[in-house]
Length: 74
Image 1 (cartoon, rainbow, N blue to C red):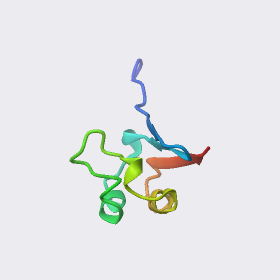
Image 2 (image 1 turned 45 degrees about the vertical axis):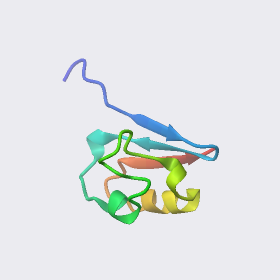
Image 3 (image 1 turned 90 degrees about the vertical axis):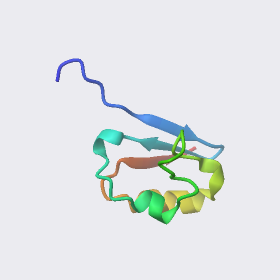
Image 4 (image 1 turned 45 degrees about the horizontal axis):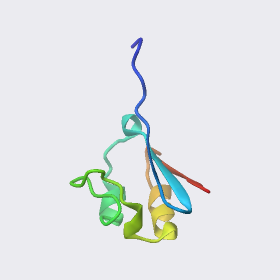
């Protein structure tokens, strides 16, 4: 639709920036079932990068089937 903007949210720590595009999400639940401390839909914000290591966070994002989650290493 004209005027619609795709929502993109970013969360950062010292080493990585995680991008979430909710419009792409297929709700597979792999993110929070695999790493509930970081990806918790009951929390606001729902992504807390200080709850795990960068390596575990990147792995969990890599298994996101919709690619609604992505990351960039700083």
